[in-house]
Length: 314
Image (cartoon, rainbow, N blue to C red; front, side, top):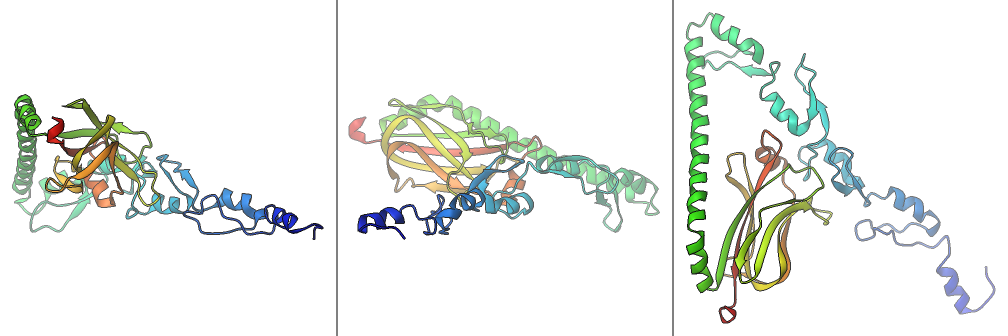
């Protein structure tokens, strides 16, 4: 007990070791440890953001275990090193690399392609099974399966060629299109770019596009600073822009097909915008990560951006 008046009392409250105080991460923590325990609490607080040991993504400490082991987690770690589960293999790599490895692993158990055969063999033994099976139709069935697989691969290649031809045509007509939209007080561009997977902390940026009127922009993917999301996708302008905006943020699968899109505004009701950045926070699901990560570990993203300028300012 201290001697003194009310002023001394309040001074004491401000330094009392037994007074409950808010954690520095109180926005997400909610606990109020005693002042004497505050330092130890904050050092171990589950709301403290720490980097994952494998992918370096900053996450709340309480979410690290789920991030590392649970494929259903909003931001499942694809950089964690694991061993191929196939007996006799022993290959090690990241989860992202292991998906590619298992697609060709000679120890992976695969089903016989023959419709009336239920056999499952390691990939390295399937050819012998097909050529020496008592079912005389195994080899023709295998050939038919290979032809079917080749046909699917050719179809995918044709889709990609068609997409590239469409991009080529779009590039040829860009000049005329920009003249038309400039006259109408509108401008549009579709950003398509590559990022090195979902895991790394570093940012990935798209190409730069000049919309005219002094408006220049590019897109980016980076970690979100919101605790409930893992990533942020957005558009960054070189200067503050005042206009209406409709932005469609999309994730593409391995065939460049859209698997998820979120909108900021619409064409009919664009968002009133007066800033230098428009962004969208997201947490790709395990399924979206699996279908979007390519053989080299990269992903493809797309943002369709439409700007609506004040006609009087044209």
